[in-house]
Length: 271
Image (tube, rainbow, N blue to C red; front, side, top):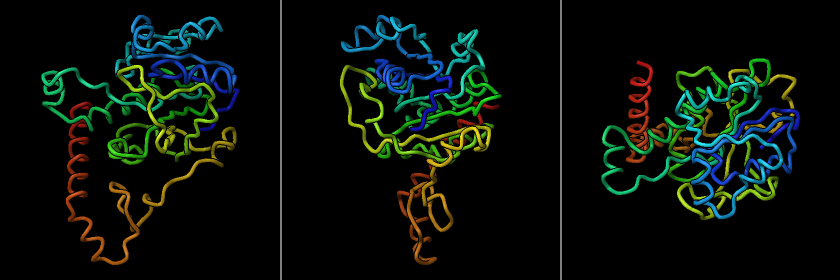
């Protein structure tokens, strides 16, 4: 992940705030505002080791009960609206539903795959509408794991359908650059493994001179090039027979089904 110290940074969904603290201590950005989905009391109860009071003691603004899918929460940025250069969402994941009934109620109309994509889609949408400064690079960073089920969200493909922000490329996430950052389980006080973290970069702008340092680090994977299947991340095909075999395979058909479900959500969201 590349962060310019001159950038104005907003973090969202930072569970125990250790990532925001690591940015403050290691990057020392021009401006930093941190936000959490949980309220302050829940943070203190859920995470024995959290950075809430440390950030406040260092005059870093912390917004609690910040739901990235709720435009009203973005509007609480008040004086900081349209003031940021980059908004960052680290290892996002819909919290587990408590009990079978809750799970069934929330997934009756759609799947967890779609719910997670919707979370990220709305993050990009509202960050651009409310948080990012049109005069800056207007960057959205999403760091996710390169394993199932995260890699089935098609972050670099159809996630941003209907949005002005484009996928610009990605950067491997190196946690060693953020001393003190502990990746947490979304529901409890437990550290989880940083498995092949990748930071996906989105912006409605192209890469220009004032973010040339970022441009030099961005790459796009080979599976996005012709003769590959970007959904399943396979290829290149050696022959047309190989391509046909893959397109008819159960795995590919499952991915097509997920894409169809995602398109249905988009249609309903924008109808």
